[in-house]
Length: 292
Ligand SMILES: NC(=O)c1ccc[n+]([C@@H]2O[C@H](COP(=O)([O-])OP(=O)(O)OC[C@H]3O[C@@H](n4cnc5c(N)ncnc54)[C@H](OP(=O)(O)O)[C@@H]3O)[C@@H](O)[C@H]2O)c1
Image 1 (cartoon, rainbow, N blue to C red):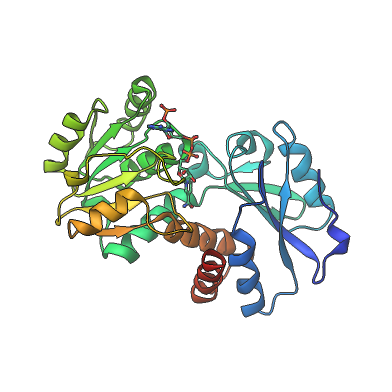
Image 2: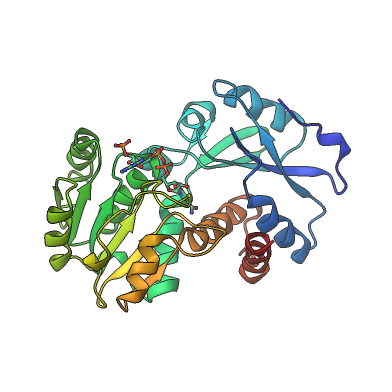
């Protein structure tokens, strides 16, 4: 592993792991939070190869770390690398936050709860009242959102994925979570998605499409209407994703993945320090990092 905890001032006590990891903006969000709270600690990036997550966790604990964020591709491997798994993380099927207390490794997932807070902040809405359509119900992000929506008891949850079998498997699982939630899978064709939007309140992009300039369009431009809420889990440093640009042009309300990054980070901070996160310091740090 590529790190040396001793060379940091203030000392490194928190980290984000992934592979690759150089792109992560989590340090620019968490270091201002630590400073704002007068906590003498630093948050660093550590590249960890696949298959080495448990070993990395033990090393962090031995070096006096308080916690770790876990990003792609380690969120699933981390499930089996903790001593105590939070029930929500078990249900969401991934760990993105590790808190180290008295030498014990506690695993949490802040993506699902961060999604709920983001919807509340951006739209003033509660997921439990929304009919939700998720595009990309095959990856970890789509799964976390789908399970969280069902746990909230949203009235309708529609799943679409390029590889349909993955959406079918997820639907079978989430339909057991809430008697109130009607769960169905649709084919990912323009026609099927456009037709489904008539009965949808909140559209979520949980695919990785839209991250890079030149990515194929997710949907035809006219799919989203003014009355829709549009949540793109992706964010771009160089402007809006094509989905959000189209949705805004249609008059819809939108939110991007940066808001999710902020709120999931705030929840991680709460797990580590047992106090509310300084949200505005984190938001300003993220905004600066994205503008840089
Ligand atoms: N803002 C945040 O804090 C936050 C948190 C979590 C995730 N995310 C973002 O959410 C996205 C998904 O993350 P993940 O962890 O779920 O990734 P993942 O596990 O690799 O899943 C990728 C998903 O995207 C779909 N997909 C990929 N390329 C596609 C294409 N060309 N056309 C249609 N569908 C395609 C996949 O479909 P198949 O199943 O058919 O392969 C799958 O459903 C990423 O952009 C990630 O950065 C953001």
